[in-house]
Image (tube, rainbow, N blue to C red; front, side, top):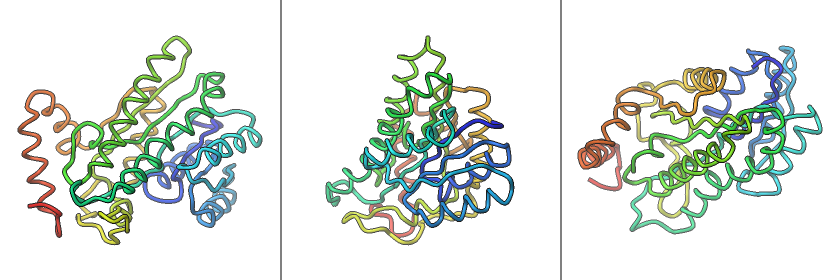
Amino acid sequence: MKDNVIIITGASSGIGFALASELAQRGAVLALGARNGQKLEEMVRDFSRRGVTSIAVPTDVSREDECRNLVQKTVEAFGRVDVLINNAGISMRALFEDLDLKVLHQLMDVNFWGTVYCTKYALPHLLQSRGSVVGIISVAGYIGLPGRTGYAASKFAIRGFLDTLRCENRKKGLHVLVAAPGFTSSNIRNLSLTADGTPQGTTPRDEGKMMTAEEAARRIVRAIEKRKRSLILTFLEGKFTVFLNKFCPSLVDRLAYEHMAKEPDSPFK
């Protein structure tokens, strides 16, 4: 990763922040995108003190023009793009029958369209560098999680989009990684949208028992270095669940329902 020019969306918190920190340690050159411009500037100052080159580009990935600007600013500053990590994302927690459809639009705009927009404008540069496109999805991109219709739909869509992009460019040297963390400790659940689109404010899960964002970042970076096509993190709630779903989907439906129903204030029982 040393001296690779890497764009990270959603870089100001959670797995995105952990990825930026991990890649900074490895000597990468970073273009940091997120809506929280103040946090990005703090990161750039901190990295600069450690001898790491980086730029902050405030970016709302749901806006095509801002995704284009993120890529343009990166190329203007560093002359190329070697890796694009599409990490920015939001979640939700509500039954579909209770859900305001604007919530699904918001989930797709940020999670799916943000990935599409950034990839579209970075692709010419990545083809030139024979670089990597990374999509951070979730186990919800492999199985439907009750109470997360919009989230699962967006993650399934990202996986289909990136798998097809890989196939289209198989003779051009483009590397495409779809990384699916299991439940990872971050602030995404605090900001998850409820049925009317307001953030729920607190996490319904024990964050201390989850994989840390730092460990997820380390494994994702290793997968980029090895140019893997897919990465599923955690065993029981990740690899095993995805494997079992291939052969016993009805059982996985029941187990997923029962597991998610145990959350405090679950929208279903």
